[in-house]
Structures are given as structure tokens and as C-alpha cells.
Length: 497
Image (cartoon, rainbow, N blue to C red):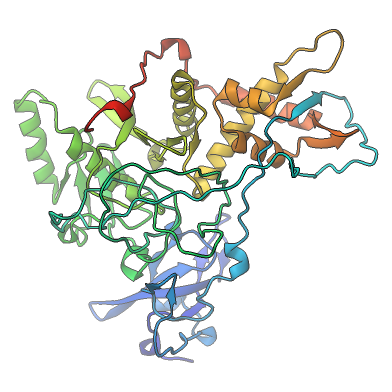
């Protein structure tokens, strides 16, 4: 048996954990860090093929040292896309190329008429191909890569260099790629037709600069050991204590505290409960004077980073609009969640980052935020889509919303002159403000599309209809568009934000 002292960073071995059924299991895990507390060693482990929010510190009793795999020795860390790697070598470190290339851009039909019926029994499709995708050589649009804006990544504790253009707070699916100094000008021209599984590599093999426009783009050069580890133990926010899921770049001196205290109204962080009480007293004496929105949005993004793995923080939040949802009681407004969106998005993104705080999850607030973002898009007269690729939980939430919204439209169609109702992809997109790519991917996900006698039809089975009706009975929170008072602004005509 290997001695405890031989365990080093980068080792992989089975680690004991409890699953959702409260049963013991031994998944393979990687040792990311080792620390010694009062002569007792603790190991920070990441469970392979599990989300990073499950990472934790464990004692040596939970390690299976008989099956330990030591990291491969390499003379020099290999580089990817011309960028230096930051992780130590370990067994099976590299991601297979097939996995990276698995995401494909969905073909976009210019105009395809879809018919659907509500049969008691699903019709047989003679000679048809039920799973044939909506594609043909005459209805594809080219996939252009967007020109990226480049900025210098800085941590909150680091002063911003005067020659560096400020950037914004963006979620990114993965970690941040190494960024370079900003180029003059803010304008970008791009045509992004990405889907949930989009690959981030350009088609010509030339690595593109990281998108610095909002959110969920995968980028891995800053995915080093520091940012892979949770650095905040616990957060007290009002009446809730939250256990962070991921790393967040709070000032380093706060990361050693057992509890980080946040003001639940302005989200300012403090070292102790006494500091928080003193801060609250000042707010009462000043009559709850409005706090600076710039600092609030920065504090909001620091908090959000604790629960969003795929997010990179920057200083300047001016290019973004923030919509914060709260619950109200006798003590004031308590934050539930939020979403942000770009003031100007050349890719028709209507959400850059979206989060419901853990105490309020599974209560319908996430879907309510998504619905509100699309109601704003309807008023703007645009179709919108969230920045992709989405995180695991984000993809589940959006697929659920898209499915319910599209099925609601289809089931509300009425036949004319005894014929089956007809609707097009464009019509669904215009009614719901959901982008065409998302409509197509949702129809494929629900397996509604069938090819019959030279045309595409939508077949809604009884199981689909019953499942939709049950889901809508549980969806009690809805946006009343009649109560929405909103006048869109043309941000392109404003000199500065």
C-alpha cells in the first residue's frame, strides 16, 4: 500500500463518496491540492466526469491507495492553440479530439412548412425517416465565425492598467483563455449560428480570440489549479447560509475566513458579522441612500461566480443591463436571482448570464427569468437566444422552457376547413421570439419531426400532450405581458454607456 506521503497533486485514485441515494460509491477522482492542518493531511479532489460543484476536501481514510495512478512525467507542459498550459500533467489528461468536435451547428431552413396532427395512435410513416434532420443543400446558411474583442483579464485585487481597456462581467462555459491587450474600438461584426453543442474552434483550424461579450463560451487556458478549487467556505446572505459551488475571485484575505458576510441589499462583503452590523447601521442612519450601481453589479457578479462555473469576471459592467428578481417582505427586497444581457448584441443574444440562487431553486424562478427575457425580446421586436454553449443546469432550464412554450403554441393551433393546422418555423420563432435554431433543436429533442410524403410533419403523441399538461399545471409563476411597461432603447446611438 502506498504511503500517505506519496500522494501528490495530479494523482488519480478511487475516492469514497455518498451518492444521491445515500449509498457508498468509489468514483475515480483527481487530487488537485494537498494541505496539512494540525498534522492531519487533507486532499482536495475532483471526481472525474462529475460536475466541479461536487469537489471537496477529504481525509486519507476515503482514498483507495491500492489503485493510485501517478501523473505522467513530461519534460514540458504541452501547449494548446499557442497558449501555455497551466495544469500539471496527470493520467488521461487530454480531452479526445472527437469529444471536442461532437458539437455541430444545426442547419437552418429558410422556410419549411410543418404540419402536425394529434392522433390517438401515432401514424406509421411509410418509407419515411422519422429522425431525419431538417436539412437540405438548398436551405443551409453559412456559419461565419465572429470577430472577437480582446481584453486583459485582471483580478479584483489587481489595479487596472491605464492602457488596458475595461471589460465586462461575463460567464464562460469552461475557463478563460489567455487574453491580450484590447484593440481600439468597440464595434464587432459577426454572424454566430451556434447551438448548444457548438465547438469553440474555428472551422479553418485557426484559434480565435476569446469572446469578451457576455458569457457562456468555453475557454480553458486559465483553468489552472487555483481557479479549479473552491476558495470560499461559506457565505451568509440575509437569513441564508450558502455553500459555494465554484471559485470566485474575492480578495484573497477573505478566502481564509470560515464565513463571508454579505449585505443582502447592496451585496457588499465584510470580514465579520460585526462589520456587517456596522454597515447595516450606517445604511439605516443614512436612510437607505441609493448605492452605486457599478459597485452593486460588480458585487452581484462576484456572488454569481460562486455558483456559475463558466463565468469570467471583468471590471467594466457598463456594456450590460442587469435584471434582478427579488422577494419582498417587511424587511425589504431580498435577491432571488438575476440575468444580464448586452446592451448591443450583434448575435441576437437576449441573455448573457442567468442565475437563481440555491435557496430559491426548484421553485419556478429560473423559468420565470427566462420567460421575462423573451418578453423583453418580443417588445424589442427581435428573436433572442442565450449565449452558448449553456451550462448543464442552464441547458435543462432552457430546454424545459422552449419545450413548454413551443408545445403551447402547437396545441393552441386550430384547423381550418377540416384540414390539419399548418405552421412554419419562422412563424413559431416570431410568435415566441425564440431563435429558429433553438426551435429546431427543441423539436428534434422532443422527437416531434417526421418526414412523410415529401414534407415534414409534427406528430404530437398522447404521451407528449399528457406530459405537457401535467408540467403546465405545476407552472404557477408566469409573466403577465400586459403589466410590462418597457420602451426599448437604441444603444447604438449613445456615445457612451
